[in-house]
Length: 196
Image 1 (cartoon, rainbow, N blue to C red):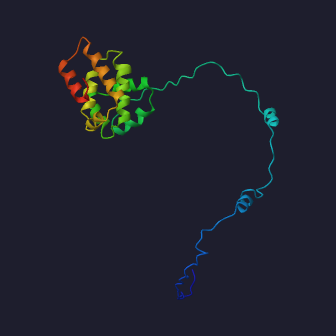
Image 2: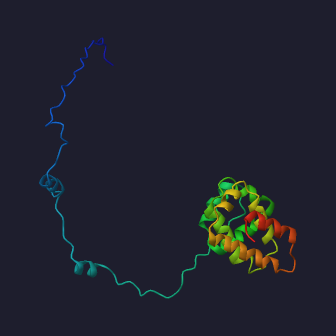
Image 3: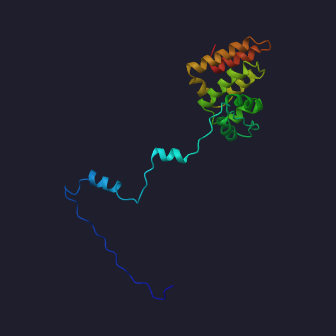
């Protein structure tokens, strides 16, 4: 450190005069200047021809006709909302069915939480229609009822597309034909989802 004492320096504000109309024009760079900048010398380069590339590359083996099946282990049932949404987005439709089945039905409303949106709602309806109904899963009505208990559901039900309403209507019609049906639950579902 220096042992010298600090000097006081005076600071003067300089106010520049207003620019004339010629100076107020935005700065323009000519196309030639831009070309010079981009085409300036950046060091030597070597041109590689297509034939040279083909000589250097080893011949790859012909592709085999084995399908690549991504078998990923099913994650455990989610402990919370964030974990559910992170996992849900990464799953295939069949895995979504298995994942949804792994969730305790009484916890489904809580797990869907405030992040329950139209995309997830549509995914759930597709999963129910494509997997629960064909498998005649006995918990189908309970899952639909638990979804309808979510705080975000009334808004999502109002904004359901015609396709989604058709999907729900189809699910409920099939549920009515099942041997073990609860007419009171089906009536609740019809009212909640706004379909007949």
